[in-house]
Amino acid sequence: MTKDLNTENKILEAAMRVFTRKGYSGARMQEIADEAGINKGLLHYYFKSKDNLFASIFDQAFREFGPRTTEIFESDAPLLEKIELFVDRYIDFLMEHPYLPPFILLEINHRPEALIKRIQDSGMRPNPMKLMMQIQMEAQRGTIRPINPIHLVFNIISMCAFPFVARPMIQAILQIGNEEYKAFMADRKKAVFGFVKDAILVTSD
Amino acid sequence: MTKDLNTENKILEAAMRVFTRKGYSGARMQEIADEAGINKGLLHYYFKSKDNLFASIFDQAFREFGPRTTEIFESDAPLLEKIELFVDRYIDFLMEHPYLPPFILLEINHRPEALIKRIQDSGMRPNPMKLMMQIQMEAQRGTIRPINPIHLVFNIISMCAFPFVARPMIQAILQIGNEEYKAFMADRKKAVFGFVKDAILVTSD
DNA sequence: GTCTATAGGTAGATAGAC
DNA sequence: GTCTATCTACCTATAGAC
Image (cartoon, each protein chain N blue to C red):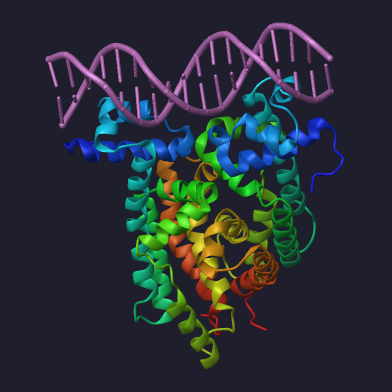
């Protein structure tokens, strides 16, 4: 899994995994060092403190997480196409980085102020304004049902993201392993988009 | 807020709040004692260890969380009525206990095996089987669009629960305080039900 | 750059007075 | 039942050899 990375990247990778499993307070520098295959002292050589290491990890995570969303939200495609693209790419992205949603939610609930400041500093602007205006316009033109754009956006994000933060529970309920879970989520891309389409389109297929 | 409870209940209430804010490892016995307005030694008098206190909290949380869901899922009401009731009661319940979703998600990702065992032991059986069969039947009768019952159930739960686990982020994005957030979630009850109704009903009104 | 050893601080748990 | 004081263990961070 961990290939020939330099020490700094090995630490970052290991730290991401451990922080995700244990949360900030639960994570031990020793465990991170073990997982990175290096010594504990080296952690402090590369990253002055645990806090500093965490900040590095978090920034990296958010720099991957944020822009993709914004990019799609603010593109010029027609609404339905945009939604389909968003659902597809968003779920794909979360499947590539399954550790991210729990990690972000953990810290969002742990230190909200710190997180919000960090997001703002990172230059990522979670601004679905353009998308919402597009929704409102289409509703006025009558091509989609009248709907509160904010709720629509949150509906879509919720349906995509929630299964990832609740993943262990879902696997337990459905009694499925990792491979079946992946298949389930792949299937879900079509399911969510179809659901949204049916909900907002005036004419049924 | 904390009225005239006996010491044990004061501790349980305080512990729930602190565990929710900080997670298991982040929570400090001292902070729990302070929040309960009692001494640290008393915590160990009532609950032998931190681990034991946590287990008590968790069981209590899940005993409230589970049955309400199951009850509605397995009632005899017509599908749409059942969904409306579920969305309404579910969001109401989460608004009364806003600390629960982050708390459960934290532990679900931290110690999945322990959680799953605990859920099973608690007698709560998250079994939406009856509801899914009802969905399938209505789809066959043609009263609703054909839909995968599993995805429908997850869609509904996701749209209700996700805004609670992502609450701090939502408040940051919408730039709203606690009161406005409550109003938003109250409004959301209608929004989610309307959305689901539009998505599954064959005839648009 | 990488390691070992250790200092310094903190948190869970216990003992014992009241 | 409730408190104060203290023990013990562990974890971050640093110092210093190689």
